[in-house]
Amino acid sequence: MSSSWLALVVGNTRLHWGWFDQSVLVATWHTCHLSNLAIDRIDTDLYPQNTWLLINSLVSEPEISYLLQDVMPPIELWLASVVPAQTHLWQQVVPSVHLVSRSHIPLNNIYPTLGLDRAINLLGANQTLDWPILVIDSGTALTLTAGVSSSPADAYDGSGCNGSGYSGPVHDGEIYGGAILPGVRLQLNALGQQTALGSLMLTALETPEPSLQRQLPKRWASNSEGAIASGIAYSLTSTCIDYISDWWQAFPGGAVVFTGGDGPLLYQYLQQRAPEIASRVLVDENLMFKGMQAYRRELTT
Image 1 (cartoon, rainbow, N blue to C red):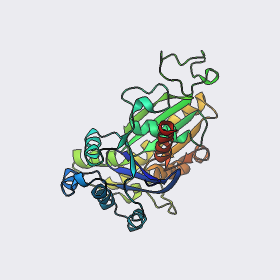
Image 2: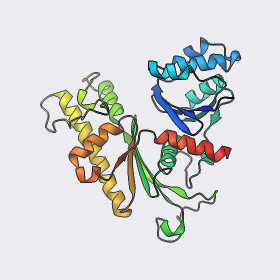
Image 3: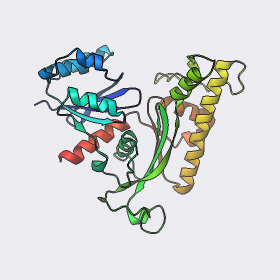
Image 4: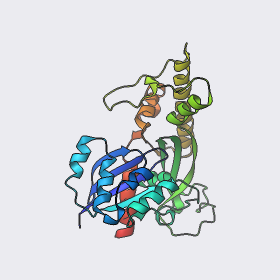
């Protein structure tokens, strides 16, 4: 049996992969969703060999494909999904898949409709940061998810309990609350599909390479593309500034961490608009994988 295992987080528009060798995160990559057409091309009765070929076929980065050549099936697959149709497809392809369940995530106060990706991100943040923590995930949607300590000394209503009537397993952290709004791509897609503007590719809103500094768009634009870039960039950063400021009013020492595909872009905008706030904010694109690792450890040790 291979010592390697795969973490797969199914987002609204993409698959997010993490390859672990025991406890070490070796590589991460992102692919399109799995399709029925792709499944029809393989014989799932020959699992796991053919399934491994399917997983490898989704990879577009040559360096990742090269790394995966050294991994021999069978390999554990741990899956957290916010898209039921994708969950069903992966259950067909990998019958032994380990599905992340809300009831097993070691956080208190997880409400039934909380996205698994939000809970996993928060769990991942707590692997390196102490409570309280605010995670800002800039993906298809922009989600803000806050967690606090479950200990009475840190209970957020000051009464020694969280006031929710929660009676499940006791863990050291709990969901405090959060917010959801359309992210960069979702806003762009909505404007492209629901207006006469058509599909727009805005350089100002492209996620930069790590070494590239993306400048804020001109606030008062003189063309439609610039106006859209301005509206999205300034509204999203204003939202983050407002929520972060409120968070620090409630928890002056609380951690704030950006993640998600557009997390680095949003952080760069924040640096330019509110450098004093940005100086206290972290960026970690691997929170989801740290969370998946913590979840797996919780269930296997």
